[in-house]
Structures are given as C-alpha cells and as structure tokens.
Length: 429
Image (cartoon, helix red, strand yellow):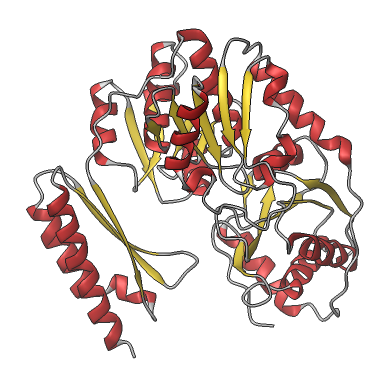
C-alpha cells in the first residue's frame, strides 16, 4: 500500500481512485490496535462501504467499532467527548463533490496532531491483514444526547423564522431539530441520500441561500456544508454573512456582554485585513493562526480563548464545543434575532480579495526564492492589504490570496504571482 498522506483534515480523495476501502480498513486496523473507535458518516453513496471496511479493520486490530450512523462531524466529536472510546472516525469529504469521500480522525482533544498522524500512517503501512467488511451496529439513540445539548443552548426561539439549507448532506440527521425550539423553520436540501451533496446548495452557494431567505421572508437563514461544520448566514434583507462577518458580529457582542475572554479572538491568515482593522477599532485583538479549524482550536487552547474561526465558516464557540459547528452557531444567530429583533449586517470593513488556485506538479514552487521575492515586492508596494502564498495541504495547488482597497490592484498582483509560480513549476520538470 502507498503510504497514506494525512492532511490536518484527515484523508480525502475520489472514492475508488485516490481513496479506497483498503485505506479505510488499514486505518481501522491501526486505530483498533490502540483502542475502541466511534464511527459516523455523511450520506454519500460510498460512505456505507467505507464504514464497513473501517469497522472490520477496527475488529481485526483488536478494538470494538461502534457507529452512530448518519451524523454531522461536530455531533460525532461532541458524542466522543461524552463517551469512553479514545478515537472517532467521521467518513466524509466535507464540502467536496459527491464522488469524493474522506476519513476524519479525532481524539477527545480534537483532530490528531502531526506526531499521531505519522504514527498511524506507519501502522497502516505495516498492516498485513487482508481487506474485510463488517457492517457496524448503529446506536440510533446516541444522537439524542447531542440534540439535547443544542436544545438546551437554544432555549425558546418562538417568534423567530429561519431558513436552513442542509446541503443535501449529513445535516439531514437533524432536519427536525430547530422546530423543537418553537421557531418557524423552512428546511431546504434535506435529502436522505447524498448523490447531490454540496451541488448548488449549502454553505458553498450563499447566493442560493440569499434567494431562498428572501422568497419565504424569513428573519434569517443559514446554510451548512456537507458534514455540518461550516456555516454561511443571511439576514432578513438577504445580506450575506460569511465566516469573517459572523466572527466580527459574535466577537463584538461577546465583548459588550463581558464574555469574550481576554478581549481576543482566534483567526487565520486568510481573515480579511479589513476585519482585523475593524476588530481593533472595537478594542478586540486578533490572534492569527495557520489555515484550518484544527489550527484555530490549537491557538484557542494555547491562548485561553473562547471564540475563533475562519472566513470559510468554521466558527468555534469554545465555551460550548471546541470544534466548528454550523448548527450551534446558527442557533447562536437565532438567539441574537430573538433578543434584538434583527440579525444585523455587521458594519465591518471588507477589502476586495482575490483568491487564485494555481495547479502545479511540485508544490515546492511556492517556496522558491523567485516566488517569495515577487510576493514581497508586491506586498511592499501595497499601502494597505495583504499578500499570502501557500501550498494546499491536500491538492497539487498553490493558493494565492491578495487583498487591497482597489480590486484591480489586488487582481493584478494575484495574476503576477500566479504567473511566476507557473514559470517556477515548469523548471521542476
């Protein structure tokens, strides 16, 4: 077996090609040798086979596999923190297309660190047990514990009307939950099977959310991604709130109420620099981390913070759950609507931002001296804004991000850096 490459979000790939049942089985063996494993998954067509291979692998490794069935990633993590199993595996490709799938591994502390990932990869590579399948028994009652957690936080939300887009994904497991708060709820893209997961719906398509919220005249709306850990929202006017705006709104509100620890919030290097300026004007300090919710959580733990997240919509309400949870954050927004009678569009500065994904054969092109010199020269010429060049953790891409008060300057800068990356990549052949 080729050595699996774990990103910070686990193993991901196209099912049957770059992600196989063999990979899942070997992961099960590696984890089963360390203890029992809690399993869950989204509703992609390939998820049952991967779960069965995982369960058989756990058993072959000496552990016991227990499944909670269809579940969101944050719900599975919450349940793990309340149980005895040392590990959980979520079968999902999150926001990726239906033909993809993935394996997210958690301990009670969250996603695995690099040392643990490398150790598990080595154990997977050494496993000599032939592939097998065993359909795991599903504990159907397990999800009620997570539902009770959300409902306790929500309280009475009667008088609030909300539209929720479940992205055709794992959120289907909780399609009826918000009605239990007393709110008027309009549910979209709640599908039992995930053949069209994330397709023209969910957190990746905020324009669809906006249209639906305006059509039913809801007070607010929010959309999940395929596994329920990302959120994008819209207020009753159809104004979109991405992760940056939601974080700004929550940070200001928490500070006003004396609940924002150390007057700080954990953000990533992708956070819009206009948001950083707006937070500073409110007396809130941004502590920046690397990209990814795992990096955000690590920063929150190190700094003793209770709010963090990223532009893509991973928002962590640390006093409640140390992972991104779209349903939890959506309920927090509903509570603001209930208390204030509206969900405002935050008065936050947003600089025009250009993002380019440059396909490469060798990701070390991002580290070449020519690319660094080009990026530094452009950054030095910017009066305001930012330049960021980084290699993707999961794909053969170099990601280029530029921000500037002038969209034209941001776009021109991004294209210039992309051109240099392509030239450097050709030299690697």
